[in-house]
Amino acid sequence: MRFEPAHAYSHDPASLWRRLLDSGDRVSYEPELGLWLIAGHDLARTVLTDTRRFSSAIALTPAVALNADAAAILDRLDVPTVAVTADPPRHAGVRAPLATVFATSAARAEQQWGHLVRHRADQLADHLAHHITATAWPDVDLVELVSSRLPLLVMLDILGIPTDDYARIAAWADNFAALMWGRLDDDEQISAANGLLALWDFCRDLVELRADVDLDEQRDGLIADLLRYRNGDDHRLTLPETAAQILTLLLAGWESTAAALAQALEHALADRGRWARLAVDEHYAVLHTEETLRHSPAVDALHRITTTDVDLAGTVIPAGSRCLVLIGAANHDSHIFEQPDTFQPVRARLSQHLSFGTAAHSCLGAALARLQITTGLSALARRLPDLMLAPGYTRRYRPSTSLRQHTALPATLGPSNCPVAHEALSPARCR
Image 1 (cartoon, rainbow, N blue to C red):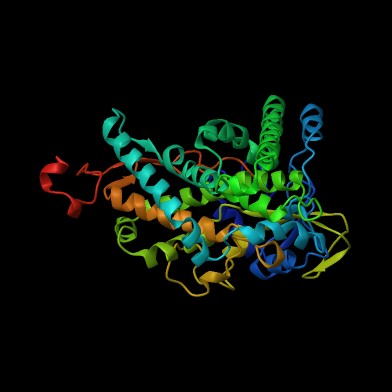
Image 2: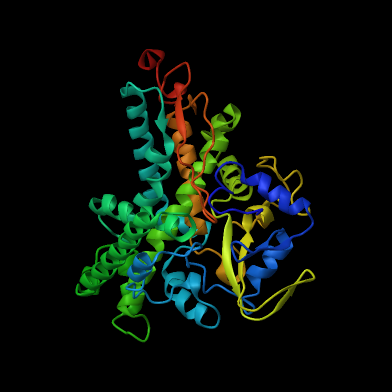
């Protein structure tokens, strides 16, 4: 088998992409998984754009069949259809409320949320600087202390949810990606399914509680914005549909951005020149973020199912077939990107990567994700100019068919051990 979900992305996914692309067989079937693999930029774009023949209905269906007890728990999830699983024409209506209130452009995201993101990024950079100088251990884990925290804290701020709820929301949501795209044993499946059910109950109860508050007295945030959009009209937006939007943001808005930020940090810390430039060059931070998204996409694959027989590049995929659109392979297609395996922020056609999807299902949170990654990188590079990957670091990812998450990203300080930019302090302060 060329593609085994428990191991394919654990160590070196680029070798898998290269093997699939170089074979010339860009549409292939894996009988042991029951999946069609779609590799190559043009084919991936074709599939993602063709919402009539390639449905998104299975986008959030577990890749590996769940045991009966876990499946029974998920059957209790009465979540209305969300945009990521909806097909046209219903998709436009499901997506409309969030698209109306959510900042989808870079300028609007900066105007609306830039101050929140900068506050959280500076806060985490200060905490990391204190932790790394106060602990007796030489290394810190940037996944634990930065990349997993920043997106969730920002999302809670944006939604208007108190950060007192951070720990339990994180615990409930943490196993979501593993339940959908990883490999869990029976007990882990049941635990993860219960966590997802608890998170849905939290979102539903929160929305119902907020809906009882007069619109003029609502706490600031997207929950209030959605309730104002609804304006008490179930034909416009029901309360369960509002709660489903919140659930989607907490899950998709956290896991994928956290994974992408960790990728960006690893690429930055792998080269001292990149790290130094991130501290002073905002334009470079944008290019570094975009190249990270192309080179090391957090979401490596998207699930689709055919609604009819489809002839794709001369291969007929039968109706009802599950397909895995390999985003990483598309982003490493040498027909589109020169030297695709090289991390090169200044490159041609960079905007053509597919890490945020395309067409109808392009990611609504792309602008916010970019803002968080660029801001987080710059804040850390300014605050900790001597940060470096820990000696002996070896890259490892969690097993998954779709989401590429570091298990850890150990880092330490270089020789100077000064946790702030040198030009900002006198030499005595750095001793």
